[in-house]
Length: 146
Image (cartoon, rainbow, N blue to C red):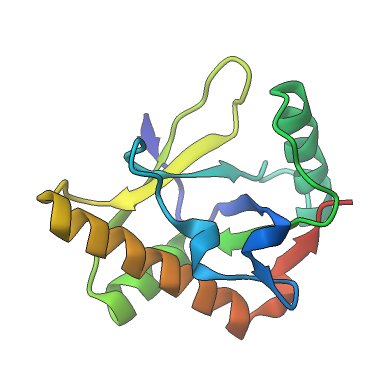
């Protein structure tokens, strides 16, 4: 596991039930209680966004991850996420690249420190709300699954 380069673009699939008017709501970014991070994918830096998302779609399909065609991909700049969450949520986050044989693009976003359960829950919810806010401010960063 290594930190993701702050220039990297990250993508997260958001299902139709987590969208409002095509923009992901905060619940699209909630960390499940069984997880320690929010799963995202690092878009290959040698490809454009559309080509990178096409590669991510192929990886998800091989993993038998059911990406609904009515879902969306949220795309973020890693460095902007770190700065935005620190500035507006007072939470430090880390983005770690965690590749696996079936998903070389897998990464995770999590608060930089593991806190007690209540603080952890509050911190991850703050991150989720801020990720949703970034997308409301930048709707061009939301792409159809196709």
